[in-house]
Structure formats: C-alpha cells, structure tokens
Amino acid sequence: MRKKRIYTCEIKRQRLVAPALCAVCPRIHRCRSFRAWYQRHKREYVNFVVDIVNRFPEKYEMEVIFMAEKQQYVQIVDTATGAIERITTMTELNAMSVEEKLALSKDKTLYLVTHRIEPIVKVTLKRHMIASKMDFNVPSEEKPAETKPAAKTTKKKK
Image 1 (cartoon, rainbow, N blue to C red):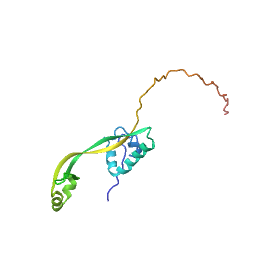
Image 2 (cartoon, rainbow, N blue to C red):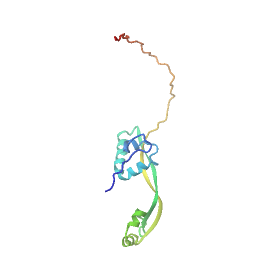
Image 3 (tube, rainbow, N blue to C red):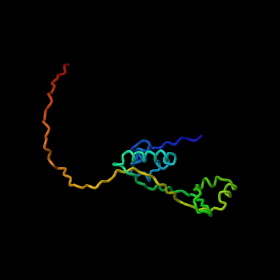
Image 4 (cartoon, rainbow, N blue to C red):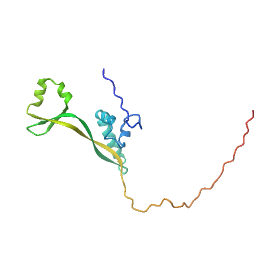
C-alpha cells in the first residue's frame, strides 16, 4: 500500500501547499513541495490562476516562470517527422523489458536529457506609473474633536 504524501510549505509560513498561497509566493520556482504538488494538481493550479486574472484584470497579471527539474530523462524523437514522441525517466526505462525497449526505440532517436523545464504561471500585481506628485506630509484640514470618556470609579471590598 502506498503512503499518501503530505504537502507542506517549505518556508513554514503556511502549513499546506495550495493554489491561493503558492500563486503569489516569491520562491515558487525553487520550492520542492510545490514541484511535487504541481505534478499531481497541475490542472487545478492553472484553472485557479486563470480564474483570478480573469476576475480581476485591472489588478493582476500572469507571469510565466520556468521551473527546472534536474533528473536524467530520455527524450524519444521520431526520426521521420522530427517530433518529440515522449519523455521518460531512466527508472521507468530500466523497468521495461527488452522487447518493450526495442519496440520503443524502433525508427526513433533517443537523447539523454539532464533537465526538464516546466512553465508555471504566477500571479503578480500590475505595476502602474505614478503620473502626479504625491505628498504624504500634508497636514489635514479637519482635526477630530478630542473627547475623554467618563472614568468609572469602583472600589473593591474585601
């Protein structure tokens, strides 16, 4: 029986990995927890980010970053068309029988790849140019009237 993996945030600000928390995290492309969670929940994450950007287009924009995963992969390219047929890991390839490996490599070229780069969309606030001068030390015209509440005097008896 396979154990269920518990995804937790690496920087310990949040206890779990969730689209709402990870979409704005500054270290999303380096987070191992997000990488493992993203492989299983890719559709949920992309739907969340697209929904937020569509719901609030004046505030947020999508930014694409690339998350690199270092592992040995075998890229299988069809020699006739030149298209990438699939990318498998070395462990998956070693687990195959000899007949399956022969069928997989017939009329194909195999390349050893060390990194796989996955594009990830991230939510960022839109940046606006400041057109006019902003003054923060301007004294306000209205001053609220100072009122003191009536003090209660209660004595405790022993």
